[in-house]
Amino acid sequence: MQRAGWISTRSIDIPLEAINDVEMRRSIVGRAIGAGTLVIRSASTAGRQEFRAIPDPEDVLRTIHRVRRENQQRIVRGTPESG
Image (cartoon, rainbow, N blue to C red; front, top):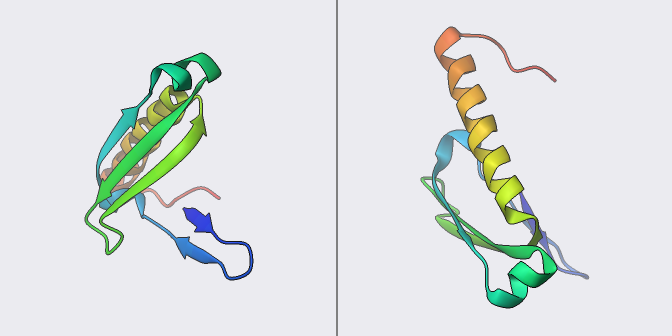
């Protein structure tokens, strides 16, 4: 989910099932401050979204992959999502 704007707000939701690829980029400065950019490519209408200045992007990337795997396993087993 991405939200932007102060006065008017724009929100984009990318369903886990629609994520095709996640790319992480870190500059030298980003490494020094522990931040980076995540680029998510999806089959949804959002297409390609860039999330900048993400703290600990490697952890976020691992979390996305883990949650996608868990979600896929739930779909295969037919287990409902836990709230």
